[in-house]
Image (cartoon, rainbow, N blue to C red; front, side, top):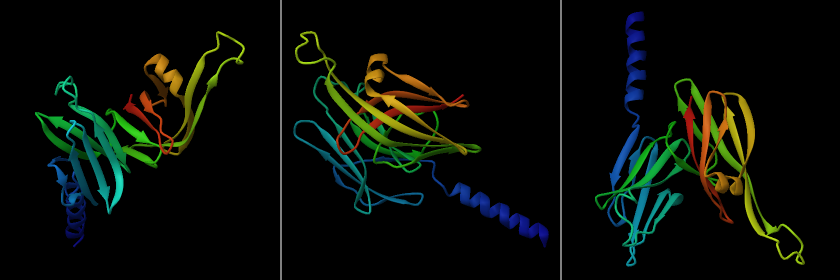
Length: 221
C-alpha cells in the first residue's frame, strides 16, 4: 500500500511539472487574436500595422494592458537589424516581440537568467527562479532632475538632465536597495551591480512621466 501511495505522489508531481509550458511562440496576424493560453494566463494580443510602417503590439489580460511594443520600421532598417526588440516583464514571465522573415511573433516564457529584459516601474516585482536560485527585483522609485550647473550670469554654464532610479533587489532573504543614474549609464554605456553569486548588468533606460524602465540582464556567476 505504501508503494502505491509513493508512486501516486511521484506521478502527480511529474504530471504537474510536465503540464507547465516553459516557452510559447505565437505567430501574430494583424488585428485582435483570441485568448492565448499559457500556463495559468489567458493572454490577448492586438497587432496593428500602420501605413507609415510602424507596428504596435498590445498584450492584455482581462482587458488590462500588461505589455506594449511600438516598432518604427522605416525603409533604411534591415530585417536583421530589427530582428529582436525589448523583452517585457509580467510577474515571473518574459514577453518578447520578434520579427523573422517579415513574420511577427509573441514569445512567452518563464523569466530566466542571462536574457536581456526591460523592467518598468509599473511592472511590480519580477521573480526569477531556477531550482535553489531565487531573485526578486523591482523599481521602487525614480526621480527626474534637470537644470543648469551654474547661475544665469555664467556664460559657460551647462544644462543637465538625469534620472535617479531606486532598484530593490531581494536575494533569498537579503534585501538591498541600489541607486541607478541615467547620466552615469549614458556616459559609461553600461554598468554592473555585484550581488555576490549574481551580477546585474544595466544596459539602458527610458524615462517617462507615468512610468520608466531599465533594460538589464541578470547573470548567475
